[in-house]
Length: 264
Image (cartoon, rainbow, N blue to C red; front, side, top):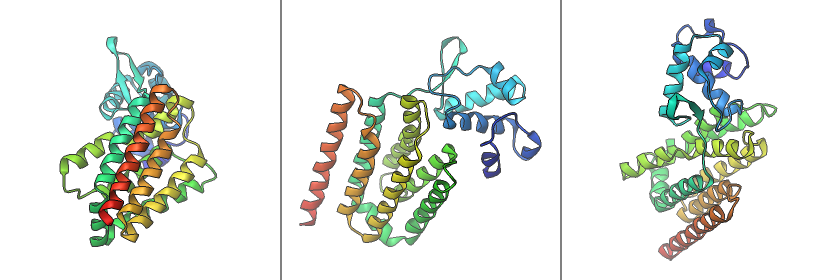
């Protein structure tokens, strides 16, 4: 699907000759998904089958099938009377999900470090994803949001793979926080994540890799906490979300402190 994804960065109707080996529903799904990531279809926006059909130059059926697929993926919500809208996120839901992710990564910090020592492919795979994201950041600011999120998701899941508790890993994946971070920013700002924000993200990805290389669980915990806390800070925009954000920070600090105690 790489060729599809690359071609979908352009605006306008679909040139179906480019996708002879891909189903029409796949192509339409990718285009709508790409438009969501670019901010063309913003959170809360109603998605009208007839309008999308005319825009893409295809019949209603593949558009309907594509929207149903995007409902199952969590990008679109089906409302009563068959209306479909781009999914909206709440700040408190976002922070709660990041708190769960932070709890999981800190709890399994020692295990992550041990696996990193035992399996060198974890580091090499993470470095590959980091490098791909660096390449994206140097394309004069032209960035495909979907490509970025997919790559970032792979980087984080790579060090969680092989977790001794499969249910925890499944929960970790289900949280899908990299996607929700991108969508939450769109939700609040009506624009994709800024290039500067993404550059800072990738600096912290590099720090994660170095922490696993160092074999120091406390260092890893500190980097993880700093990375996730910074990502959440811009969503603490009212009294409730600010209070929840502060709880998240305090919980992280206590857990990192417990890693110190274990070490001593």
